[in-house]
Image 1 (spheres, rainbow, N blue to C red):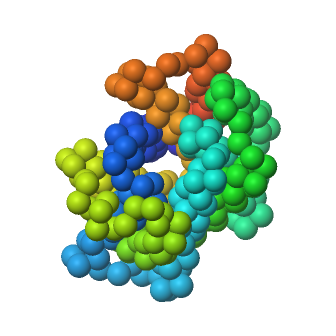
Image 2: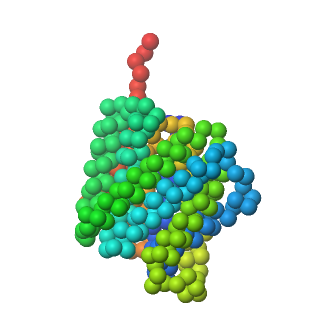
Image 3: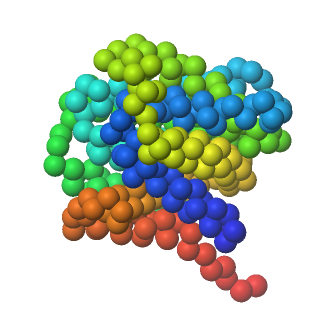
Length: 287
């Protein structure tokens, strides 16, 4: 992967990871599904100025369902049933491994031995981060989170198949498609917080978090991921997804005063080691 693309991938992971502390502040006053609806609505409003991407409507709707309602809806539904939020935010990024597996099945990609070893190292790091969470979740909640990660990987496969479609246009239009089912889920599951009361209680913290999540963590990040998935194999791009919880934990520790245990630190280092192994240049023999 060229240095510029590697930089963009790290930047996207950093932006996405920063949504953790932003969202933590907003969720103090806004239900999670409704906050996610506002995020995708604010990103999708740009369909008024951005042309429809050169792809069928069914792909746009499917992307919205998988990457919006599927990924976030299932995760928040599990959390509403008592599944720990920190553990959920980590396990949802098992999508990186599902993405690689799906790319092998649907795109006939063949990760090399080095990619397999690097993936195993990064997976060990993710499991260490997950084990560092003191709370445990139910089996049903775990199944929902993993299915949400599977939905995200399926969405990544559609992004990878975009071909000539403009990834910016895709990000905006799929956000608009995601807002509809997210609002329906919020109205169905978050009945204790009527929409009018929620909107009335919102402060500048939620407004800033919505704008950040919509403009940067949705439109910009999905534009970058879409472009990278089209141009590179999933085995190279997917490990960057694992940097998201690393940045999220680190930024929460830095700005919100949350604790960073030794186990979490080791897990972060293993993820960085796995990513470095993927990106390390391979020396070729001299002719």
